[in-house]
Structures are given as C-alpha cells and as structure tokens.
Image 1 (tube, rainbow, N blue to C red):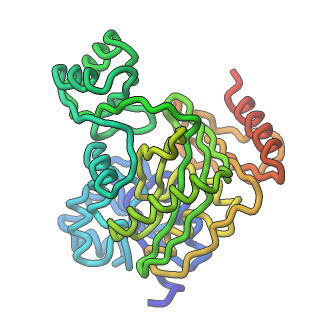
Image 2 (spheres, one colour; image 1 turned 180 degrees about the vertical axis):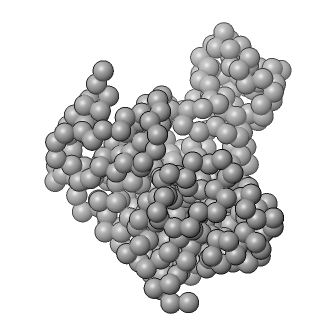
Length: 366
C-alpha cells in the first residue's frame, strides 16, 4: 500500500481523533472512525467514514466497514479491549490492547509502573468502608482516594484531609474499587510526551509544565527547563516503551518533588498537554503518532520558542489579542467541557506567561 493511500481507523470521535485526522491529511492518510451507538461524532464530521458499533455483528464485518484499515488506534484509553483484540486478527492495533488494559484501571496502572521500577506515590488498593479506613490508617492524612475506573479530569476522586472528609468520600465512593494514594509534596506537575515507531525509533518532546483547574488541565507551558528531570523522565518513558513493546505516542505525567520525579499516571495516546506541539514543534504529537503506528520516520520534536496552550473549558469564544491559533472542536457548549484551546508562542518565557494569564483572565471573566 502506498503512502498516498494509507488508511487508519480511530476508535473514538472526539477532539483528539479530529486533530489526528487533520494532521494526517498532509501525510496522505485517510481515516475512518469507530463510534459507540450513541456517541457524539460532531468533532470528526467530514474527516472520514463514520462507523457505529451496532452496524456490524462481528469483528470481520466491523473491519470491512472501517475500510480495511492498515492499522487501528484509539483516541482514549476507555475502550473495549476485547473488541480491540478481535480487530487485531485483521490488522495491527497500536498501542497494543494490553496497554489500554493497564491504563484504564488505576490499580493495574500503578502495579505496571512499579513493575518497571518507576517511582510512584505510596498506594493501597481499597474497596468499601473498612478497607478505605484501613488504608488511611496506613498512609495518613492528607491522601487521595481514586476510583480504579472512570476517574479522569477530577471525576471519581476525593482529597481527604481528615476523618470527616474521609466519611464523605466513603459515602460517595460506596463500593467502588479504589486506590488510596498518599499525598505528595510537589512544586509543580510536568508531563513528557514521546513517540515510538514499529521499528523502535523513539523521539521525545521537551518537558511541559501543567496547571490544573478543579482537576482539569487549564494551561501547559513548554519547555520546562531542567536537564536532570528531563533525563529522568526520558529514561522512565523509554523503560515503559521497551517493557511494553509500545508503539505510538505515550504521555507520562509526573510530580516534581525535592527528591526528583514521582510518576502520577500515563496516557497511551496523544495528550492534552501536548497540544502546544501543533504550533510550537516541527512535528506535532498527532503527526508523530500517525508516523509511529505506520512505521514512518518520526519528525523532529524540538521546541524552538517557548510555547503555551490554554484550554477553553466551558467557553467557545476566541480571546482577543495575538495568538498562534485558536482550535475550536465543534462540540455543543457545556459547563467545564473542553471546547477548544488557544496556542501562544513567544521569544521570552516571562512574556509568554503574562500573555497566557491574560488569555485565561479574558476567557474566564464573569
């Protein structure tokens, strides 16, 4: 199959699938998208063929409906790994389903990270009142209680500072399987995004500093200048990629502590904290993910100028002032929903921070 006719199927129809398809078009790649029965597919309208899960009775029919793709990938970790394994009979699925199984369950993820020797916060699995109380007795306050599944963007997560807050969390968590994590003293949060191709070529982007609002990413700035931490993060990412025979883009989120990096979680996909690469790097994370899963040479990942990304959470209007692009995802407006993002570049990191704060102030003024 020639590069001009290469075809990829993406599981999911959100903004990450949208940006992959947009970045893949200049590479001569065509796309199809696999959606849940009632999934909103507005983000990928006009970007390729849409197939819904209920349109086929088995994996082979689904594969054919998707246009017999050369490779299948996903824009999210909450995917049906049984379905991915069924589709894997007909073409490669990258990242491999075993990685999604790790990432979509917090305890499996923690165990996989520690099995590869990566540092994580002390943690205890717990389910129900007695086990949660026992976990807090062991780890102490403050701590975080996080559901093993369906916990993202601050959802199904509770920070407990005392017994009263623990009781509130217990009542909300009910019998959800959870992981209780000791609180970590950290100065900031950073992420490292890298890509590994089928042939094993690896490229990583600079460290990115991330700021959150109510559990959801608000601002990312790159590069985070610390050579020692960058070397540590790259070593951790390389270890996971080697251990898991990983293919595609992988994101590693970490806390910066006085003793170095502590890994918080991974994302086996293109990541929100890497959106700045659309304007701030020679090759975006989206293009490099596609290149990796098609085993094309990876593009350069340098950050020539300080770059920033501001998430548009529950707002869908472009801010005034100079910027390097406003991406609107085409989703219906909802409180706190990721509606788009703004990218900024500057020769001066201090000036970039000031401009980013001005954009945030304008977007979220009341």
